Structure formats: C-alpha cells, structure tokens
Length: 177
Image: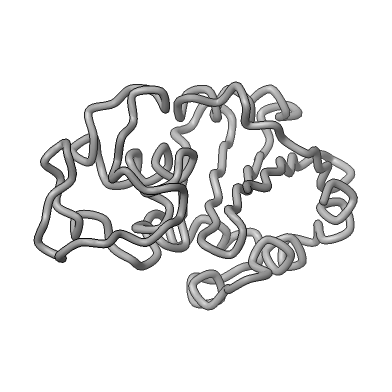
C-alpha cells in the first residue's frame, strides 16, 4: 500500500494535495504530475511511502532536473514506484524496462524480501547487490528547506510527518493523510 502526496510552495506557504499514482508508469509521468501542481515554477515536493518499507522524496523546481532521495534503495527497487526512483538514481543498468508493465524485478510481491543467495542475479542479469539496502540519491535534497542530511538519514517509520514538520508544512500534509 502506497501513500503519496504533493507539497507545492506558494507565496502563502505550502499547499498539499493527495496524489493518485494509478496513471504513473514512468518518472516522466511523476514529474509531469508535480509540475502541474507547481505555482509559478516554485518548488514541488512529492512524497511516496510504501508502508514502513521505504519512502522517497522527489523535488521539482521549474524546468530543472528532478532531485530524488530514497530511504532504502533495495526495498524501493522491489516495488513498482520505488523502482522508478531508484532506476533514475542508480542508472538504467538496473533494468531495461521503460514502464511498470514491463517490470519483473525478482518475482516477489512489493517489499517482500528476496529468498536467494547474495551473489545471484535477477532475470535481467542484474546483481541482487546492485541496489544498496541503504539511502540512495540526493541526501541534501531538503537541506535548504530546513532538514539536514543527517536528519534525513535518521528518519524512520514516521518520516513524511517529520519532513513536513521541518518544512513547516505538517498541518497541510496532515489534511491529505
């Protein structure tokens, strides 16, 4: 089960909206969704969380390239939306699939642990160890907004609430939860 929300910065502070990921199949789809929520090309933060397995933050500012952070690369890579983010962070070598429909990462359900030797490869020939079971991406993604690298890496089960609190957007995020 996923939770996703958009926070768009405006002149009056942050505006939050619940986000449906049903039509998101690629990173471009997710970026387009974020840019549609942008007011005057201001900052938009997309939160994606899969229960307590992992969370991801996508930051869009105008037409700049997206900045991405994922709390646990290995857990995220085994889930449909997390794979989109980790693929962007770690490169296309993880899988040649262009859309979620083409994915067959490891034959497990989302977030289910792998049951194989560490040096095995998945069906695409990608080493299981290719995606670290650690934070991946831009660890300074929220530093200028009030959350340092070390604070971001220390987050656990209530990460999105703590991020929103650091951004001064806890109340608006809570309205869409």
